[in-house]
Amino acid sequence: MRNDRPVRAVIAEDHALYRELLVEHLRHEGVDVAAETADAVRLQRAVAAARPDVAIIDIRLPPGPGPTGLHAAIEFRREHPDVGVLLLSQYVEAQYFTMLVAGGMRKVGYLLKERVSGKDGFVTAVRRIAAGGCVVDPEISALLLGGRPHHGLAGLTDRQVEVLALMAEGLSNSAIGARLNIGGSTVETHCRAVYQALGIEDEKDTHQRVLAVLMYWRATQGQA
Image 1 (cartoon, rainbow, N blue to C red):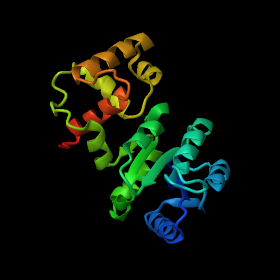
Image 2: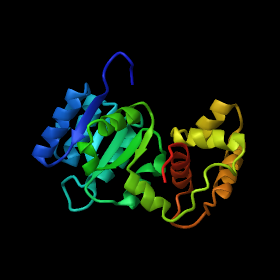
Image 3: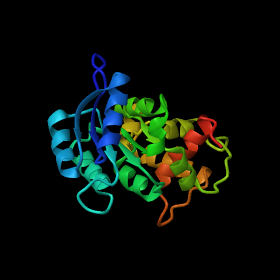
Image 4: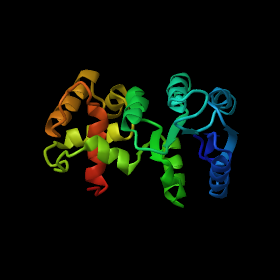
């Protein structure tokens, strides 16, 4: 994203009135809405043509009864990794967030539609994703963390906190290694130590990196 122009966005939402409200709200806040569409097929074309900073997508776009918006987002994140993704959902569906971030937590977000009515939070989320960050709805975060105890980061070394903070920025292990001038195997060792210190076991249905980042945010942002 260049600093001399506003954030550029593409919106994919099949409910016309809701889509119009999104467009109006974003433009009022200085976001350049380059394209809007109502289905996943045209979304792909719009992203390829407009090359936005962020694509804002209803998770259940037509065609099809399932989360077609999610599948479209996953596909074009592979094809256009420089384009951020903000998924909007009417319901708390934590498994879809973990599917979305399987390829990395940089420039990605997942919010419930009810958050859009918040005057500042939604646009702030769009800008954060455009800048390379990750945004997770508080209800999704709470569901993923479940009843995990909140011990903060006291059990981590300074280096482990540094690595975890870079994970939270959305950096891959190789990018973390380059930032800290350490090798990839050393980064992996630090990551394993972080998971162990935070009590995140390597289990079948556990996304260790996602949970570690959520716990970091809970500790550093004062979330319960």
